[in-house]
Amino acid sequence: MSPSARKLNFMIRDEIARELEALVPAGERSRTVNDALAKELLSIRRRKITLRLRAARGKGPALGTEKIVAALRRNRGRDGE
Image (cartoon, rainbow, N blue to C red):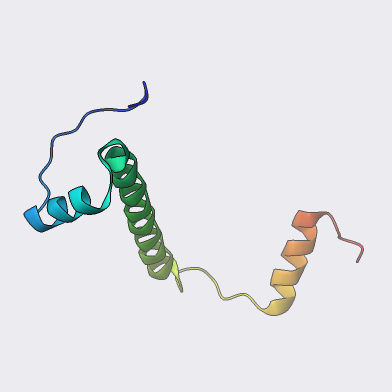
């Protein structure tokens, strides 16, 4: 385990534990669980952000294409184009 790792105590269903033990060698289990957990946490973060974006949608003023393009050009420093 790396120095920046922490030991946590949590429960895993028996069938998942058996499958983990059967499929993943002992020296690779922590990395495998870490990788799977990192992917799941990313998925949870994305779902939460999507919910926030959907909730915010429609709360601001409606913008036409011209206003959006003009704002993008200003932000990119292309006022003269």
